[in-house]
Image (cartoon, rainbow, N blue to C red; front, side, top):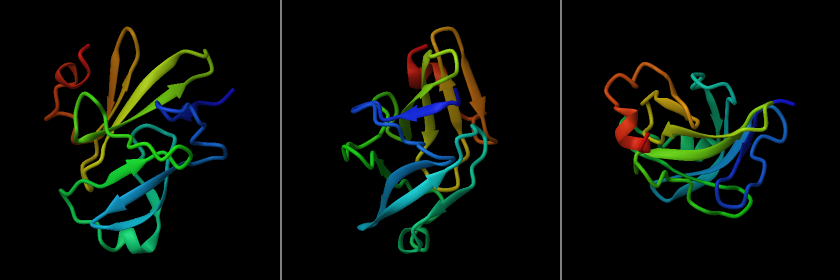
Length: 131
């Protein structure tokens, strides 16, 4: 079984194929975005109307393409939260920055927090996630 990313609200699978599919919005523009399922890989494919409007340091909104719920983290408004179910069937939280150009991702399970990206050093995950 591969890693499965799911909506924390409706539990819909967000990576039915290779990429994670989410709705993205920025400055009144809406579209779809494809993200890598590999933590630390910050490449993405996005609807051109949204991609052309994105500005470094500004936050985009992310929503589930199935239920439409906002995916903003309840612990930190600068992050998006998804669920990650690994091959061991254990549910983890994945939190990644919704600020364009900021590369920070945290994978949180019961015992530890693993961080990815060059911008995690300025973030204290214990404050974000209550671990």
